[in-house]
Length: 346
Image 1 (tube, rainbow, N blue to C red):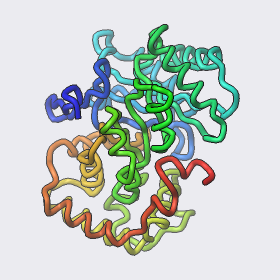
Image 2 (image 1 turned 135 degrees about the vertical axis):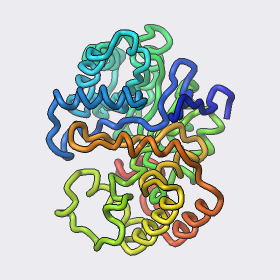
Image 3 (image 1 turned 90 degrees about the horizontal axis):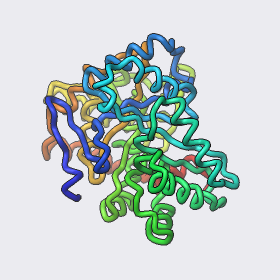
Image 4 (image 1 turned 90 degrees about the vertical axis):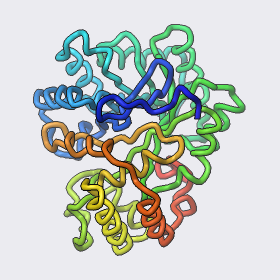
């Protein structure tokens, strides 16, 4: 790992240099929840909550052009901050086009729309997602994004979302897109697919991982410890339903309870919560720059809970206990495929 990527500590927070011009908080505020399926979000209250997250040191936001009003929320939130604070905000958006012919004009218009919604002159990071590998316009799209970064400067950095290792190799090695700084993928104690091929490729090519799904939408918490298996009806958010299906593929509810029990023991030892242990474990994995934890703005506040992640370290015994449970699970790489394959047909 190069020197520019060494963790930096300011107060009780951890930061990571994703690129020379982009330092992020290692717990990112995920805005997928504002797109729906996670409770009604009041926009006025949401903006007030965003200011509170920022003031608590959680300065990095993960969003997308398809996450409902997320980009508009960033624009309104920035408007609420004192001018001297604006440079401390990191807003990492995504471009998620339909898998069809992509032109330079389409790419530029999409980026300009995000600029306008977010109220900025350049985007900190555009994370590109593509639904269908059989449609190879994704290579053209990435070339256009790279051009907007290198020539017009309306993008500061370019990254990926849910790309597999094979396609990353094509873009970096075959096409020569060396400026990719990150790939956002699902990564948790339950879903360890990035460790099969992707982590090594990222480390070898100076690319960082941004992990989501790390606490399985909230299933990895005391709320579900020692509880009977919930029905889909009882799981009241889209995230809970999504990650319950992942747990089913991983090994089922009984094994998950065994994992929660071990995490609870470790959490009590460090005087933190289960979610903190799950987050810290992934933050310590190779190539991981940060973990994205969803924020249900105005509904649930996890600022205090999340900050505890930076106040302890797992020891060898902690990690060994987690590994022992993980050995009993199914191999999700065999069951699902590489990172992002759950969004595509195999």
